[in-house]
Image (cartoon, rainbow, N blue to C red; front, side, top):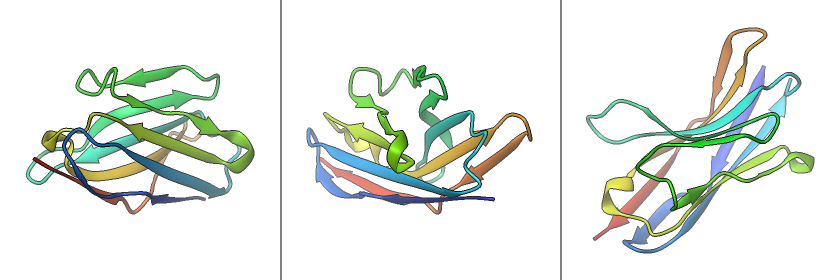
Length: 117
């Protein structure tokens, strides 16, 4: 099993910045991709950003140029650095780990991000 714990959410004004952290523990071998998803009230969960084991990153069009997904492998931590935040970025943000060998997804409990206008 993989345990994921997010932190860093909160309330920020539009135009501001936040950095989310996700620490992975447990059976972290063979994790192929780490990612951040978000879910706003009444909407489906959507992919925000991902980073593969080789460092390849992918971003939703809505966050390109504003968000980045750096990682610190020594700390088993992936971050989501969010800049120029907009009210439409308000959502619960979830950390995800995916093991393709097993076809399994692991999820953190989520952290709330609220952007006020």
